Length: 76
Image (tube, rainbow, N blue to C red):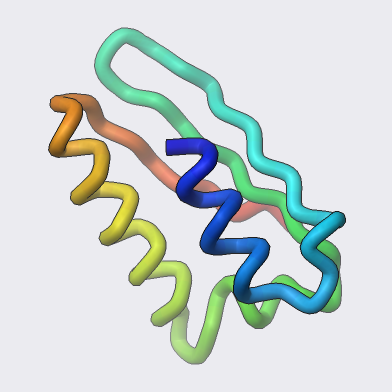
């Protein structure tokens, strides 16, 4: 899941080297934290949060396949 979010984020931003993804894993739920450069934050969130919502939807579908729950948090 971590690699999936990193791949999507690097494709969206202008500075792919600044993309940092970390995962805090629990038994049933894992929290994936995404940190990007301050200039690229708007590109990750998108208009009215559409890009962020799309990333969360993709993450949810991929997580359901492995019978786990994942939550995406975008850190400023």
